[in-house]
Every structure is written in structure tokens, then in C-alpha cells.
Image 1: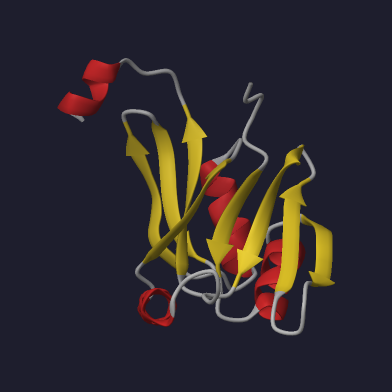
Image 2 (image 1 turned 90 degrees about the vertical axis):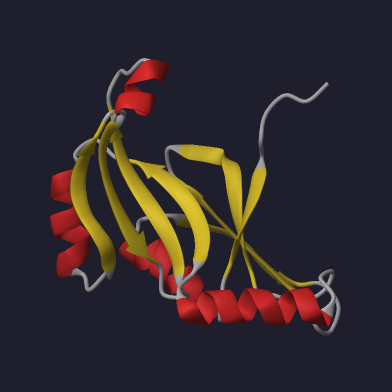
Amino acid sequence: MITNVSLTTVYCLDQDDAKRFYVDVLGFEPRTDTRMGEDFRWVTISHPNQPELEVTLMTPGPPLNEEAAAFLRRQLEKGEWGGLGLRVDDCRKTYEELSAKGVTFLQPPSDRPYGIEAVMRDNSGSWLVLVEPKAFAPEDLANG
């Protein structure tokens, strides 16, 4: 029986740079950083409030074939790859704090039917969504 989601992947161009960004800028905690064979490095982080969910910081490569890995690298380089949705208590305050740390935002905090949302990029080009949620009904999305 499946009990929860325990691992998700965020693709990055450089694992050291990505790890520094997620730990030093966003406040995640390092979990695992080890080599598995000569050409594969396993790097995970997790949020201190959600340690049971690890995020793998993965460079595009095996087990992907070279065509798929090259596609992912191009998408990251263009800043056109999705990453994580991150819940925040105060989207506007978090936006100000992260902007002061040099984080690039694609969209400032905006009111949405489901809450306040801002969109940023990590240092590999993946976009991350900050959401300060509020209660909503499904029909609110169709009218928003």
C-alpha cells in the first residue's frame, strides 16, 4: 500500500550550485550527497517542516537517453522548466525577503482565486511557485 510521496525530482544544471541555492537561499536542509558509481551523484534536500519528502537535485543524464537529457538542459537554460510549488504564510513578505537575496521573480505576488501567488526561478532556470493559500471552491477557478 502506498503511504505517501517521499521523493520528487528537480532538474538542475549544477548540483553544487542548486544545493547552495535551495539550502542557503530557500532554507531547505541537505540530506544525502553521495556518489553512486563513477558518473552518478545522488543529492537530496528536504524542507525542515517536511523531512519525509526529499527533493532530488538531478542533472539531466542517465537513466534518460541523451536526446531527453539534452532537451531538459535546453529547457533549463531557457528558463522554461517547472519545478516546485511552495506554500508560504505571507507571499508578499517572502517575495521581499527572497528579492533582497537576489532571487529572480517572473511574477510578483498576485491575487488568485486560490490565494496569493508569486513565480520565481531557481538558479538553474526552473520556475518555482510561491502560494499563500486561501479557501476556494472549484467554481472560483473557472470564474477567476
